[in-house]
Amino acid sequence: MTEEQAETAGVTQENPEAVVTNRLPTGMNILDRTLKGGIPKGSLVYFGADPKAQPEIFLYEFTTPRKTFYFTTGRDPAHILRHMAELNFAPDNLEFINVHGEYYDNIYVSSQDIAEADRRVIEFIDARLDEIYTSCAEPFTIIFDNFSFLVDMGIDLTILKRLLDKVYDMVVDRDSTCILLIIKGVHPERIENLLQTYCDTIFTIDSDLKGDKISNKLSIPKIRGMPPVVEYIRFKIMDRVYIDTSRDIA
Image 1 (spheres, rainbow, N blue to C red):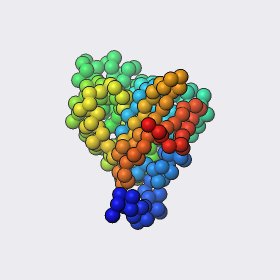
Image 2 (cartoon, helix red, strand yellow; image 1 turned 120 degrees about the vertical axis):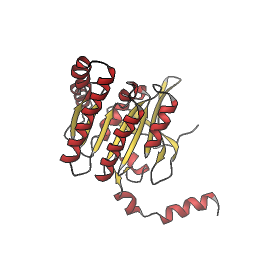
Image 3 (cartoon, helix red, strand yellow; image 1 turned 30 degrees about the horizontal axis):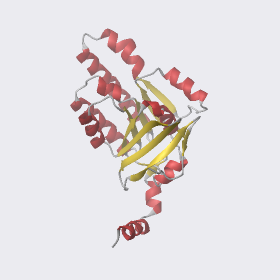
Image 4 (cartoon, rainbow, N blue to C red; image 1 turned 180 degrees about the vertical axis):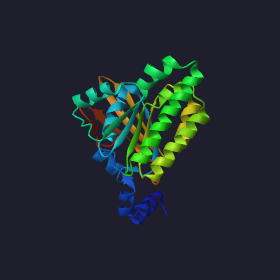
């Protein structure tokens, strides 16, 4: 059997209903069609992003299809809401967990040392996760904007793995998803590889200047339950994320 025949056979044998019902929409219809319905239910998603590509706009899109618990570590929720309003994103499904405010206004200023601050911020997140699990029986999205904050604090990887294990158990049990924003170029390759190993799905976005134009590309090299998307997906950032349906030419 040739490679082309194998690909055709795989498509023929696929159960379209099973694919769609096992997916959670991303909020971007064209991307959902590429992913055969969206992100697999029960997925931990590694979202590696060049900050120049404005990954926060993707995060806002991810909040639109369902209830979203948004752990913010880099900005105050009021600033995020202002930015969302400027782009006409409705915050109806959104609930913030203000890790940023809790850490800088409380934990950091009242802890005896960094080790105590590390412990207390994990305890704060852990308690909020318990509240989410007990209060929300329907599928939801958890967003960490950004998870790089916790990695950059130098928190022991075993502690972070325990936290991710808890999140993973939650999203699997509730047919939900969790998206970890990881800022590209900040962490050692070893740390990035370990985090990618923990996750079911990997999205990465990059932004390059080509001549007088900015080129933004999304790649999806890993997604549970289906082959990787072998070509870059081009996109533009305006008031929303606009996926370019033309084929990428090297």
